[in-house]
Image 1 (tube, rainbow, N blue to C red):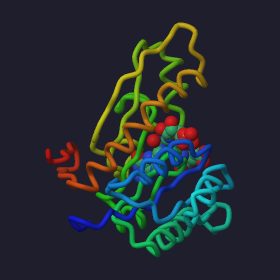
Image 2: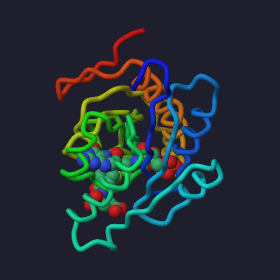
Image 3: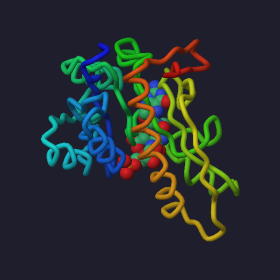
Length: 206
Ligand SMILES: Nc1nc2c(c(=O)[nH]1)N[C@@H](CN(C=O)c1ccc(C(=O)N[C@@H](CCC(=O)O)C(=O)O)cc1)CN2
Ligand SMILES: NCC(=O)N[C@@H]1O[C@H](COP(=O)([O-])[O-])[C@@H](O)[C@H]1O
């Protein structure tokens, strides 16, 4: 990432894409230090519509279209590589990125997770936290590594659990935090980079 040109970002998503839409809106603000150059999905989902509406190129790499997971991983890697991104952001992308992808983009992949890692990793963090009976949960933005939600943490913010919460109500309140936190972290990393020893990560101060 050069000091002046905005960082090129590819966003990966699998679902409603409301976090993607928030990042698209943030990137439209004059001076935001990153441009979303493409959106990738692993299934047909509303995230593609958000990209289309914003005039952003999109691509789909479905697991079922490939012989096995390794072939899918290689195809996704190739599809993302075509855009030569500085950063990859997974915003509700519901597939574990494999060895090919990590070899190509490791250290430059930012994920947002709807729980306070290391608690409640995986595809069902909100439901798992609710089922456990926690009184406080939250959002985690982290670097992606080869594990599942084990990468170095970049930012976290708490969200109180209400007695009358169900998964949908709690998840939406967490998403409100994620939409802001993700845009903030992406901008900070785009501007100042990140230093990581593989367990801890630091975004240098101003
Ligand atoms: N190598 C990594 N890839 C990804 C990570 C990561 O930490 N390391 N984070 C995910 C996002 N995520 C949680 O934040 C997450 C998403 C999905 C899963 C999961 O178990 N997926 C299943 C399939 C689920 C489905 O298809 O509906 C799978 O991949 O087999 C765990 C964590 C992004 N990628
Ligand atoms: N473990 C991965 C995971 O649960 N990701 C979560 O999917 C949601 C996507 O919301 P969106 O589709 O409305 O952008 C977000 O809450 C994100 O943290």
